[in-house]
Image (cartoon, rainbow, N blue to C red; front, top):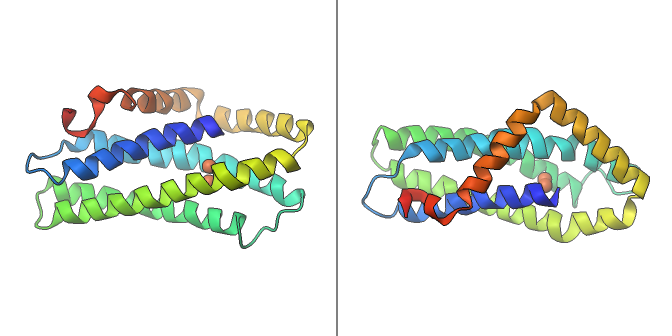
Length: 181
Ligand SMILES: [Fe+2]
Ligand SMILES: [Fe+2]
C-alpha cells in the first residue's frame, strides 16, 4: 500500500503545481485537472481507501486497535472528507472553466484544502499506521490481505487500476507540470 501512497502523492504534487499555475494570468487547461480529480475518485478512493476500509482497518481492529478515535476513526473521517472534496473540486473546476468571477481563487482554495487533507492523511498512515501494522499483523495476515486486495482489484477491473497508475507515473515526469512548464 506504500506504493499506492506514492502514486497519490504524485497527483497531490501535481495539484500543488496547479495552485501555483492558477496564480498566473495565463488560463490553466482544465482537462488534466479533471483527470486528477477522477484519479482521486477512482484510484485513491474506490481502490486504495476501499482496501483500507473494507479489509486493512477491520483486520487491525481484530488485532486490538480501537475502531473509533485515533487513528482509525480519524482516518475513516478523512476518507469521507476526501470524497466530499472531490465533488467540490469538480464544481470549482466547472466554475473556473466558465470564467465565473472569483472562480480561480475559489478553485485554488479548495485545491489547497484537498492537498492539506491528503498530505496529513498519507503522513499519518506512513509514519504511524503502517509501522503499527507491521508489528501487529502476522505473515499469514499479510498474505490474506494480499489475496483479498486482488479480489477487490478484479471487481474494480485490473485495466482501471493500470490506467490510473500509468496516469500517476506520467504526471511524475517534469514535462507534465500544470501549465506545461
Ligand atoms: Fe487512508
Ligand atoms: Fe492510505
